[in-house]
Length: 206
Length: 206
DNA sequence: CATAGTGTGTGACCAAAGTCATTACCATTG
DNA sequence: CAATGGTAATGACTTTGGTCACACACTATG
Image 1 (spheres, rainbow over the protein chains, first blue to last red):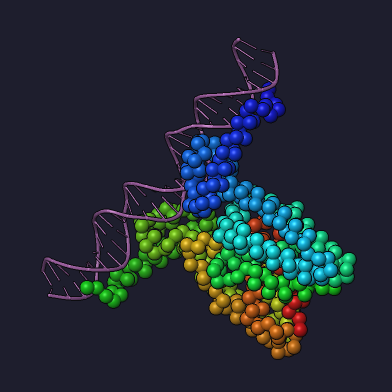
Image 2: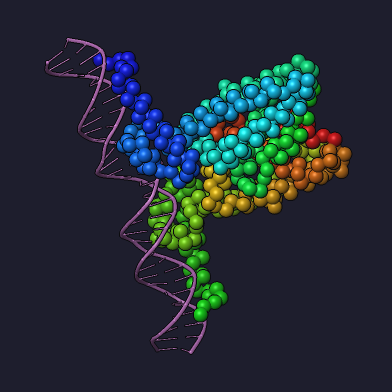
């Protein structure tokens, strides 16, 4: 009978996975996901194609892993951005600033093209892309906190739970980002988000 | 030298295209896009694979053509639905009803799975999917008209053009539909749309 | 130490989208 | 009626994501 993660074996497996991951990261960064084949990744990593599919469910899945890692970086960015905003500001201003920061990050750090690829991956039901859209994601907590403070300050309506409101706001941002992806380059993300929030935030008022 | 659309030739070309279109329509209706290969389509249509790519840029492109035709049907549905709504209702109620009807149509007539495929096609920049998202689409006119009437009744804010408001509302519906696609089956489209509109419509008030 | 059992790795293979050199066909021109 | 030229159609071929039966290496057990 077997058992336990016997280190030598496990170690090699981890190394293989890392080799694939790093090779893919480099290639995708330079050429874009669409222009990088699995064959080229495994060749660069020096492993067989089968090994790739031992460690990753699919090419998209690998890409999502990459994006998820970036998602965490994004959330850290949003969190630290929030700390720079004065508490004296109204909740609506804070939400506006936050939305602005997120738009910037998406547009300039991630890129709309990569967002599009991510969304395509979301739509392909073969992959588990939960971490980017999970309600446990830090982003949801950030919004919930801001809204909660808004409730305490008496600025935000109380008949809908802050968690739900946060979901609506993030859903809206995602929707606009999606729209920007499909209308690229005819739409400006930041502008649209701010305009939309101008309307949407009214509905949060007490 | 050649010239003119010489009828016999043109006729045959049109017939070929139609054969492909109809065969695909049938197959996709029964089995779903994902489960229908180009090979099976051309076999059913009794033409070669090359002919397929003479008439359609890609498999997705053919699918989009199909959906676009359905888009028109959808818009006719929405238009006639609007006629059944009493003018006495408030603009907000009308918008709610409309959103409800659209949700129903998407969920039951088109299906979320097909919407997902459509969205993937939107994101693949290789295809022209303009007709479904074009601002000339009847759907945008319908919303604009309702909002315009709302303005005249003094219910809707005037500082933002009704065309822009219509864009925001439709963008929101599309965003929620997208979210439903990626979270399927954990979300109910109609419910979410109505909840979201509950918040969003506040921002339209005068 | 032998043996069995399991996670890791291999590469030939498959399915399906899309390409392209070539052919078939037909209308126009001389 | 050739000859010409251009569009429609062909199908073998390429590419690429993904599979699978098998081999290998390593660990735990008797």
